[in-house]
Image 1 (cartoon, rainbow, N blue to C red):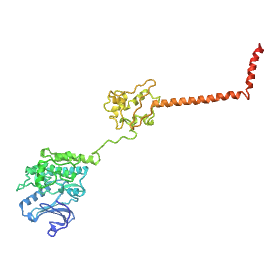
Image 2: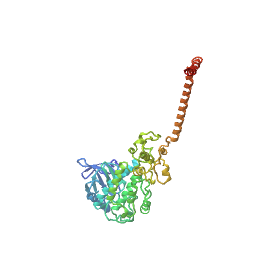
Image 3: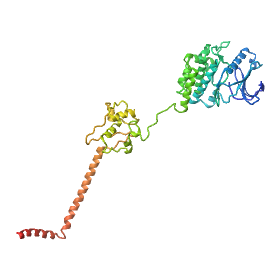
Image 4: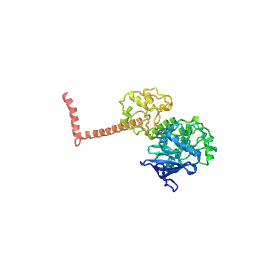
Length: 450
């Protein structure tokens, strides 16, 4: 039923019962629905049977069933019944007016709903169907155009073909009652309806809300009914969080479909998870400060590494235990079979190695990682980093130190040689005669003493 407001036509009544009519809300197979109001200003949706059907006893009976169903159902899932007159020339009944578009119009105008929205609508409809079925009623024609999206939640309308649980779905001419594409297989076969019949229609409705299309495609009534009975629904556009549940609702066998209570609970969980953005959670990328570590350990486990600039070798005064744990940091990958204390901590705290970190030679060997052996002057092999930059090579440092020492010695020798050449020249005087005289005195004095 199209619920778009339209002006009253010439043939439309202006007053029905104690209600004044203002607009047309739409027309369905049984009659016309008007927007009306009572003397207090309360707005109602008033449904009147068409004049050509008012004399048909079958349609009067169907209309009476709708009124009876509306009276028995409790809860906020349906529009509350306000008044009815089944004995009038044109029987009518009025329900509380529900503002808001139908689910069909919402999807047609704005596109398919998100997973969180579909789950929220489905949870409310499932809870509403619990109340409907507790009243002993099966809607039998649940579809997007019979669901109104009010500010207070979705509401189920149009119980015109509602039937008691267990009743047949065939009319006197043997045709199925309902909308192709949303009918359950048992309705098409003419079997008895059960609450599972509405569950099938709800699954097709949720698929439509997710995809913007029927899960059984398009075509004539015969083609659609054949697909419902013999073919599997197409759910390619249904979000992954909802697809398994929707597929379960569309099971061919009514016994395999979930109950409305199970649907309500499960859809509430999905709606809450999707609303919080947890439906597609991925682990966060490593922080820049942690990217250099080959394992996923905690930050405070390695304060020394954080303080030391990247590429700088550990100080010589580091104890063997701390150096041993540093050497085993690269051995925390899965399946390394580490038996060392450092490796054990790695396995328990870090788990798998972070992406981008290169394994150490010990882990590549597959025989278990062990701390690098240390002698009196031995140093561990340079530990790889997660950034692709290699640390300083100790051998290269020793070569540079040797060159520095050699150059320093050569400079020192050069300075000393220069000073030795200048010293004697300053003691000779102008012609060197002082030195000769001194030597003569040393030769004469011993002889004189003798």
